[in-house]
Structure formats: structure tokens, C-alpha cells
Amino acid sequence: MQHPQTDGDWVTRYSRSHQHPVNLACHLIGIPMILGALVVALACIVRPDLWPIALLLFAGGWILQFVGHWFEGKPPEFLSDWRFLLVGLKWWVVKVRGRG
Image (cartoon, rainbow, N blue to C red; front, side, top):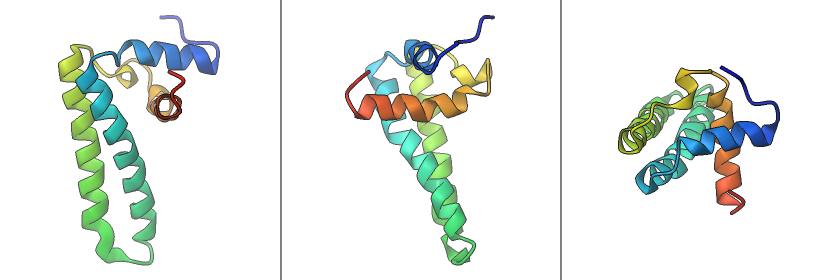
């Protein structure tokens, strides 16, 4: 399998697996939930009582990702290449800025 060469190639390939409106919505909500979970998890260093929030955000974000892919009828790209876990955030920024 040939891997993308530039940032734009990675985002373009990722976008091909995220065309269904439900999948788009799930990812536009789920990706920031996962990122937020990581931020809250770091805050748990000083506020251990925040763990339930971090876990809820993380699990909820991933559930949305997989529900979206069920509607899309395609597996998540990261199953073929782990680097797509990072591309998802770049794709989200492109979508939110209205460039993709």
C-alpha cells in the first residue's frame, strides 16, 4: 500500500473515508472530545477527581468515531496505518476552518 507523501495527501486520503454526513458529524464532535479527554487527563495530575470526566470524554469520543464509520461502511483509516490517528486532528482543523 502506498502511503501519502505530503500533509495534503494524508488529509485527502483521510477525507475519502469520511464522506457520510453522520460520519462527518460524529468526527467533528468526537475528535475534540478525545483531545479534551487528554487535556483533562493531564489535569488529573493536580485534580485526581477529574478522572471520570476524562474517561467519559475519551470513551464517548471513540464511540462516536466507530458509530460514524458504521454509517460510512468503511473501517477507520488508522487500522491500516497508525499515523492516521494524528491525521484526524489535522483533518478536523481543515474542516472547521472550512477548507475541506
